Every structure is written in structure tokens, then in C-alpha cells.
Length: 363
Image (cartoon, rainbow, N blue to C red; front, top):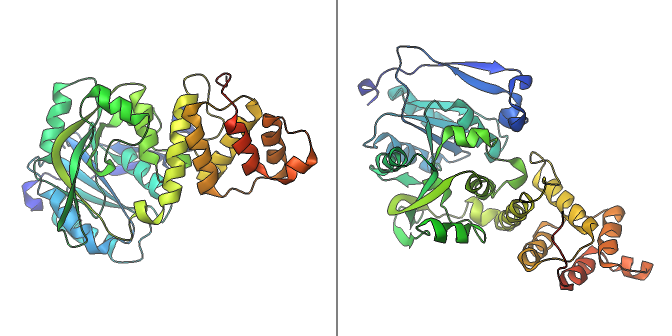
């Protein structure tokens, strides 16, 4: 298969962290990765990013579905995130037969770093996502790229999907909101886009600093919310990706952490309307959540109806050990007058605070 495609061998320049724009500081593991393009090499239309960790069972089939696309002008960046199985070997074997495939080692630094590494290496103006256990239909990239060609304002495009089981048998259709208003309405409440189906403009995501570590397990939802503040998002109703359901996937193993990260993403989107986020987006998720809750308690104002569910969810799902200082901040927010109330702990304090009517939004 590789003989049909022109050689796209690249040399990668690793620049010091000081070369990275300030908006992206901390991104791409402290390096700005810049392709050293050869003038005689045509650049691809779409860069496909596939992170994988211990996905040997499915990675070969997933990659073949990409290589069989009827839009052949693509590059495939497989980021191996410290696999202990044969994932990297399988991907490397395919790369040896098709020059469009590159295999990069991320050494177990996590999904966010793996995705950002792929974005840094991408040569194409469009990036497509897929997971190492899913399958893309042959027409997927051609149809999505055509939508971007037709709409210069479009920044992010997802599709509907079909859920399949471990053996590839159909389970159920996966529908998504179609149209600008339904999509934006849904975005304020939940993630209305299927991450393995999306395609986005490379530079639009780079300008925003890529995926953010503080939102790990809902890093996609955080990125969609930020993209929605600067441009147009859309979904296609065509089912162009088969999404595999199996016991080891993140949505099952890390369900509580995923819900907490999504809640933080929604609250951060609300905050950005008026002020900067009260945490470092490159913090670990628990640290970011703790800093957010401590800041929110310190505002001393009531909780709006939009916040109540998310704050309760953060407290219920994260299990953060609040220090005494944080307890005092929480109790100060509800005006607790006595040490006896302090002993009841921060969860009760938050419940009392949540019960108060909202007087104003924090500023």
C-alpha cells in the first residue's frame, strides 16, 4: 500500500520551552515541535491523531480503517503512551508498509500529553481524531474535509456514530445534536460531540493551547467549550465512526473522574465570561478542582442554579482531602459562627451554602 504514496519523511526540530507562545506554555512537554518540511513533499490534507496504550487487540484494525479511507492524502500519527503490550510493534509494522504512518513514543505521560504531541507534529491544516479501538468508515475524512472547504468559519466538526461491541457487532446508534442552536444548547449541559469522530482546524486548536491537563478524562469537552467561544461548531448526522464498547475503556474505568472533569469544564466556561480561571490549566485534575472550590468558597456569595449540580458533583466524586484552611474558607462562605460547625466538615458547609439563594455571580 505504501508504494502508492509519496515519501513524507520529516526531521523534527525541538526548540526550547522559551520558544513556545505564552498562551501555550507548558504544552507539548516543554518543547515546541516544528516540522522541517522538504520543498518537494506535498503536505497532507488531514493529520489523524491516534493515541494508544495497551491497545494491541484493536490497533491494527483501527489503523487499517484509516489507511483505507477514500481520501488518501493523509498522515497518521500514532502516539504510543507507554504501552506494555505489542501496540507499538503493530503500528510500526504498518508504518513500514505505508509512509503515511508515523509512530511516536510518549512514555506513559498521559492522554492529554499524547494528544498535544500529535497536534504539535501535525502537518495538515485539519486534524482528525480517532481512538485505537474504533473504526472509521471509508468516506469519513472526505466528507468532513468537504464541509471545512465549504465553510471557512467552521472550527470543529463531529459526526454521529454506531456503538459496537468487543467483537465488532452493532449495539446501538449514537445520535448527536444537529444544527447550531441545538448543539450550543446541549454544550452548556453535557458533551454533545463524540471525541473519536471529530475533525478540527489545526491552527484554531493550537491558538487555544491544545488540550489541558486539569480536565483529564473530559479534556475534549473543555476544548469544545473553548472553541465555541471563538468560532463555529457542527455535527453531521451521518454515522461515520464505529465506536467500540469494552470493559477497559476510560468512560467505564474512570467514570467518576470523567464526570468531575466535565463539571469543572462547565464551571470554567461560566467563569471565563467574567474573569480568569482560578487555577493553572496544566495542574493535575484534583489540584485544579481543589483550587476552584477554595476560590468559590472564598467569594462568599450564593450558588446559582447553574452551579449547584456541578459543585455537588465535584464534592461527591473527587474525594479531595480539604486542609483546615480550606474548611475555614468554606465555613466563612456560609457564615458559620462556631467551632462546632467547623467540626461538621466542608461537605455540610457546602450543602448549606448551596441551599442559599444566589445573590450575584462572582466577579
